[in-house]
Length: 322
Ligand SMILES: C[S@@+](CC[C@H](N)C(=O)[O-])C[C@H]1O[C@@H](n2cnc3c(N)ncnc32)[C@H](O)[C@@H]1O
Image 1: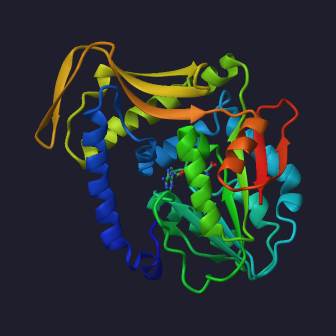
Image 2 (image 1 turned 30 degrees about the horizontal axis):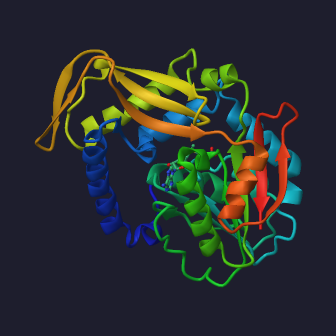
């Protein structure tokens, strides 16, 4: 599925910039002492599809738990929304959980999903346009940590931000605070932010969520190397890597790695790289926060914590910041 011409206008140069940014990020990350690859590049069409499969796994509690909180509290979370309101979602993916909030928006309100994945945006747009014909949907393909070009015609209208999926947990804490303060600028002085944050909990529940028995998370992680093979050049033998995800107690985060199974060498854009058996490429962090810990971080970023809601088992939290 494709975006219409009006949505695609102006995206060509941007898409090329992102491609070169991908090559640069891969070369920089693999040149570090601890090899890394930025997790935002998980989400090409295949990665977005695999992420959707992950959200349905028995072990993966975050999606359904966050959805249950949003469903139970949608009216209160969206209280005060008017036909002028604009719901801005950062890293919207499939926008499935967003539907609980969209259902509370009066006709005439607008929805601006922002994501690096054009495929995920295009699919969500088609589904939502059918389901909410009175909703003004304006997808933006882009990196939410860059300056986002806000759709024309919606400027000056009150904004409510939505940042679900504990995507904030993918950032180191100081970067998370910087991103929250960037969102504050984008949402404006009267803006609010509804944000989903995964809670600290028993290590076994956490590690099982990222090491599912069907191996979908492993495939999602390995897809990053497959994407490099597809989009840059065929550099990696996927069989030579295995997925691991472990909770780092000291840092309060799940770390995902791809571990080399043998001594190996590969080349990308003429640059040579070597890996020893057992050496890893660090592909993702997922920081976990106690509710009070996250509120303190939000305050450092200039927000006032207004409320926090959790599920009965205390697995996940949804905060409102004003
Ligand atoms: C963990 S998924 C969450 C998807 C959805 N919001 C949910 O809660 O189910 C993260 C989403 O954020 C997008 N994403 C990650 N980093 C991004 C960035 N820097 N800018 C824009 N989108 C980003 C990905 O493409 C993906 O769709």
